[in-house]
Image (cartoon, rainbow, N blue to C red; front, side, top):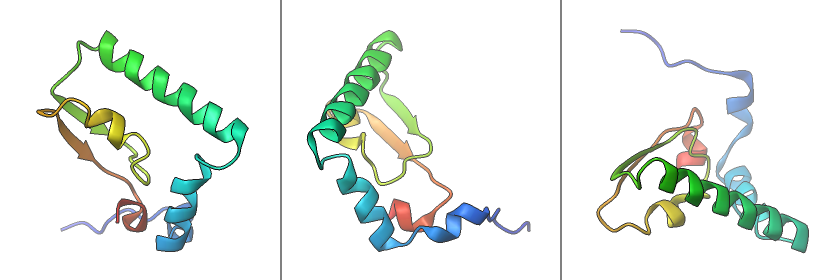
Amino acid sequence: MSKPIKLDFSEKYDEQHAQKYFHKHRSGLSRRLSNQRDQQLAKRALALAGDPGLVLDLPCGAGRFWSLLAEKPNRVIIGADNSEAMIK
């Protein structure tokens, strides 16, 4: 059995860092506008992909796009990230 891959930057993420990452996209006008644009682009990408029922969010980070991905109630969302703390 092989060991999980550990990348140097993965160790910097802990639960507190993940929470900061999640909330930083909602703080300040420029970040909120940037996040809104990112959400629009993701929504457009889903439409271009035929509004799929199965989505892989990789790397999912703190789940910034999950509310958008979950707008389709029967959509299956699979999230993966190299950082366990980000997933939590």
